[in-house]
Image 1: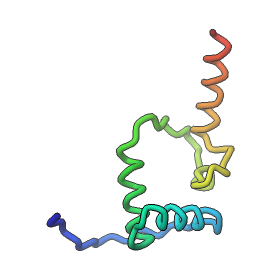
Image 2 (image 1 turned 90 degrees about the horizontal axis):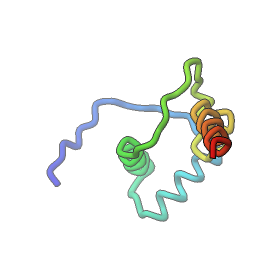
Image 3 (image 1 turned 45 degrees about the horizontal axis):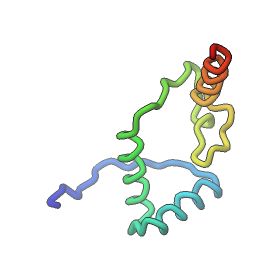
Amino acid sequence: MAADLTRGERLQIMLTTKELEALDNWRFTVRMPSRAAAVRELLKRGLAAEGFAAVEPGSHSRDFGVTGDSSDAPTRAREESEAREGSRKK
């Protein structure tokens, strides 16, 4: 595993106490060596995941939470609406 370990960019994010607790709980469960390593692993998994709907125009950062508390998230609202429409058509 000869990877370039030089990371020239810094990314700062703000998390709620509950979101940080969720990150730390996951990190310790899977035995990640640091928060940074846990965030990089979750980013890698998220970028590889399929099924993310495009975000509605006018969305804000506050619309996207980690622990599912952001029920007003534009993608979630649209997906729920589409699911309701799909169940009506059956």
